[in-house]
Length: 115
Image (tube, rainbow, N blue to C red; front, side, top):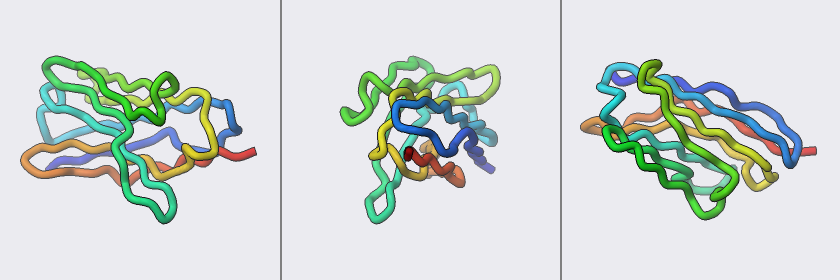
């Protein structure tokens, strides 16, 4: 079955950096579009960044453009979200997602930006 396991969240001060990782299994990782979403308290889950499979073009939300970068390592079935210049409004649970016949989600990793 499809499994996604995120890691790398934590507490960071404003202006700091974190890198999230998501390891996928149970599907053909190299051909799958991978996505990062986030959900802040009391808000809907929103798409943050995506990276294609066979043709790995990337998109990022306007709210994080210039600060967040999505990348992938198909040899390790891993997708990354490099987050720089973090702001308090980036505080959320971050989820890895893939649509492989159906949407699949990881368990989420908490990112808290606070001084």
